[in-house]
Length: 385
Image 1 (cartoon, helix red, strand yellow):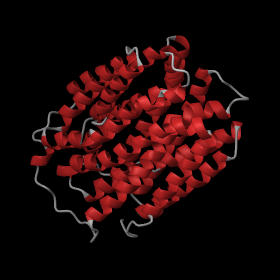
Image 2 (spheres, rainbow, N blue to C red):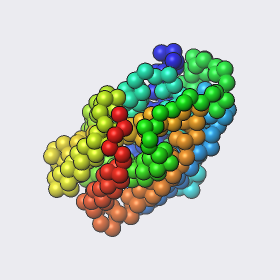
Image 3 (cartoon, rainbow, N blue to C red):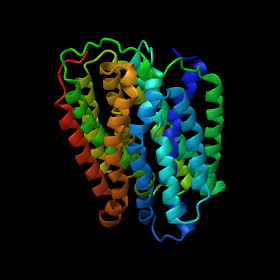
C-alpha cells in the first residue's frame, strides 16, 4: 500500500495527463487566429501526432515501468509532460506546434501503463480504486475546459500551456520526495498463481483491445470536439469562450461521477452485463444529441459524456483481475499502444468531418463507433465475477 500523499499524487497525475491532452482542443480557435490559419478545423490535424505517440509510447513506457521501476517512470512523467507543455506554449508556427505536441504525447503515454498498475498494487478494492482514479482523470478534463477558457480570455492561449506545465514539474518534485523507493523492479518479483476461471487471457485481451480501440476513438471524438460542438449548439445562448469553458467543465465534473458508480459496481456486478449497460446509455444519449440544440443538447452531452467516462475503467479492471502485477505495465502498454495509436485517427478526422458535413454527421460517426464497442463487448464471457 502507498502513503496517502503518493496515492493522491498518482491521482493528480491522471488529472494532469488528461488535462494536457485537452488544452489544445479547447484553445485551437485562438491558436489558429494567432498563427494566421483561416479555420480552426485546418489546425486540428497538427495534433494527431500527440495522440498517436500517446498510444505508441505506452509500449516502451510499460516495459520500462516493469523492468526499471514505476516510481522512476512517474517522476519522468511529471517533469517531462510539464516541460513539453511549456514548449508548446512558446511555439510560433503550426509545424513547431505539431512537433511540441508530439513530444507532449510521448511523455503523456507514460501515465496509464505505469501509474495505474502502481496505484492498484495491493489494493483491497481495485474496482473502486480504478473508479476514483478515473474520476481524477476526468476532472482533469473539466479543469482544462474551465482554466483554458479563462486563460484565453485574460492571458492568452500560451499561458494555458505554460502555467500547468510549471505546476506539473512541481508535482514531480513532490512525488520524488513522497514516493517510497522500490526495493526491486516489478518484473523481478515472483509471480502469484492466478485463477483465470478457465478464460483464455489472449482471447480476452484481444476482445478488450478492440473494445478499447473503439472506446478510445469515441473518447477522442468527444473530448477533442466538445468545446466547438457546444459552441455551435449554444449559438443562441452564449459565444463567450470563458462561459462555454465553464459550461463544458460542468459537463465533465458531473459526468465524471459515473466513474465512482462504475468503480463501486465493478467489485460486485458481472463485468459483461455492466459494460453493455453503459454502452447502451451512450447510444441513446448520442441519438438525443443528434436531434437537439441549446439546453436539451447540453443535457444530452452530459448523458453521453457520463456514459463515455463510465466505459473507461473496464479495460483496466480486466487487466487487474486477470494479469499478475509483475507484468501489468507491459500488458497495459501493449493494449494501449494498439488502442490509443489507432484511435488517434479520430482526432485527424474531426476537422475534415465537421468542415465538409457538419457536427450532426460527427455525432453519427460517434454513434457508429459506440455500436462497434457494444458488439465487441457482447463477445465477452458471461461469468467474470
